[in-house]
Image (cartoon, rainbow, N blue to C red; front, side, top):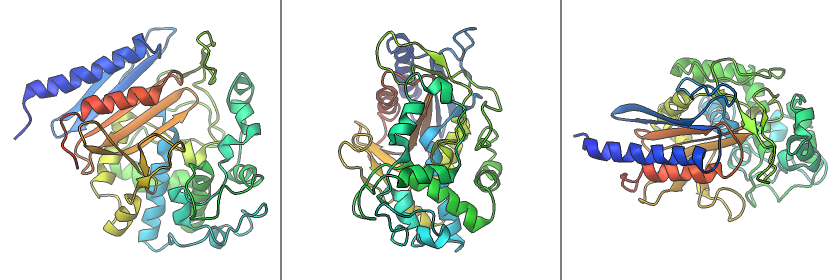
Length: 369
């Protein structure tokens, strides 16, 4: 029996109110949310896709998904593990000999499981001071087209000492996912972009989902313009259009593009157990609470999959992501039957707080699971 229509309208009205506040109060250019459940799909939007023209945001828009890329990367690695092309207990040295070395690193002790679970101890190259200076603040406008190879990103990381010995701590690290991407390519004999297309995007019909080429700067399909204050938090900070940029600095850790509908379909299939066999599914969802102050408050993390509990007591599963000009969140119930994908085309104020409000509104009627 379906839920009464009044409850459906109440939930959707509450979500729309959050979107409207994101634009009117937080001053974000635009926000979208797409709900997928047993009743079908429902799309909501507020604000604009383009501040110059006033064009409205639309369901088919592509946007940069930042660290939601990690869930795709982890899925590919786990599929290869299921096919015995690699093992989660394989070491980095086994697949990438000599790449991680010096400064106290032991690549023979870091496993694929460590990489995917943020327990490798690898320094996160994304917080290297030199890289930060290029991607935050006014200098980003000069460096937005800089191109990096995965090996260069690893080199930046290993110029710093490890955060801890492998398996003895937890730190959110893009470095681990760059190494995972390289291992996927080595184990499969194909590029990461090709594996994403062949194993996930094409079979699921995700027509707006892809990993950009290393020299690619724009988005291939219909999209909103993406705006940034370059992470300057002053109220009068200038807003810049950063739609065009090179995401090679994020690659397998955060470089992908997708749409709200595609992300809901991907997570529905993944949560529903249709992309991974049971053993690998269990590995992905073996989440443990992220240490306080190290990631999103109250979140747990498995292998490329995170969870959080909303005020109704329901636990939702998925992933979020951020990159210059674009923040997004996709979370749903453990069975994949009820999901919501969200995105904003601006990177200031508190997008995560706004996303959480949408989750609270949409999953208010869900029982704990």
